[in-house]
Length: 111
Length: 113
Image (tube, rainbow over all chains, first blue to last red; front, side, top):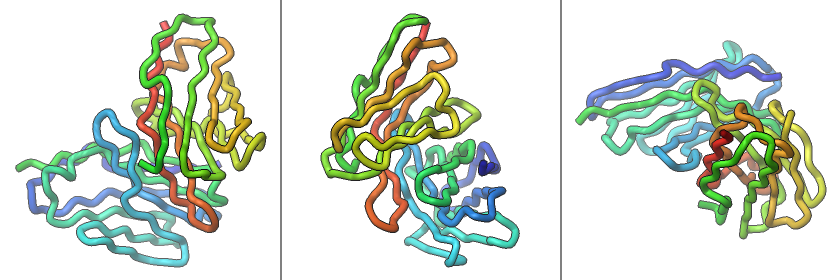
């Protein structure tokens, strides 16, 4: 099956700086790559996703890039704010039935 | 929150007892999923359903069974709970058509003593 690796496991940034989280995947058949934000005591929340036919997608301060050749994708958060502090998960899927998640990145934004 | 509720939200049970967790959705989504979340493992798929009475296994299905007799309810059963099944369990739905967007419920924290 698919194997998704996520780095770093923890990340601290100053408010206003950028944060980058990286994931790699192993199955070249994967074609959907979502990112989730999880706040303490809550379920993961979809924040952005990208399909394999697109190299980059942006939504306000959040962007995701995908490199199919290298099998890696990244989440970029610009102008970070304290409310961005959370655990972020990447995932990869093929058919839309089996989703494989990374192990998470705990992001802390220091005011 | 995509109209997803999970019950119970917290449960403590003893080893060897059966446990059933319920996921309920109000928006008639065809696809439903059960995941477990453990430190260092992220989320791992247990079972999923692609329609009433249609289910399939995920990567960590051993020790779990599921049932879906109505579109709105997806039940996860631990026939004989073990301490290794102590975890937080999340239900999710997937929106229809070519979209793969998943939305998660609030989770159930299960402790097996």
